[in-house]
Image 1 (tube, rainbow, N blue to C red):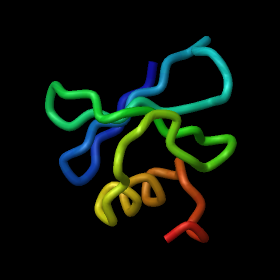
Image 2 (spheres, rainbow, N blue to C red; image 1 turned 180 degrees about the horizontal axis):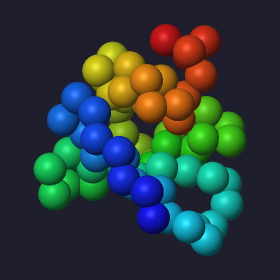
Image 3 (cartoon, helix red, strand yellow; image 1 turned 90 degrees about the horizontal axis):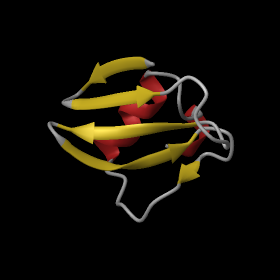
Image 4 (cartoon, rainbow, N blue to C red; image 1 turned 60 degrees about the vertical axis):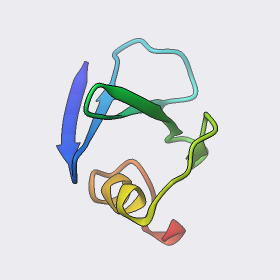
Length: 67
């Protein structure tokens, strides 16, 4: 399991988790959703704010081309 924090968000990846490769996103104790790293899109219905997208790019989960 890997945990990274940035901009008030918590990003969690689990070893051996199902495909596509993705990261779970939380803010505090509340899970916001999952980001599909392979296909560069949300896996769940949630809004991606500019701040969240910046965090995904900064931590290497999203391509810089998406911003």
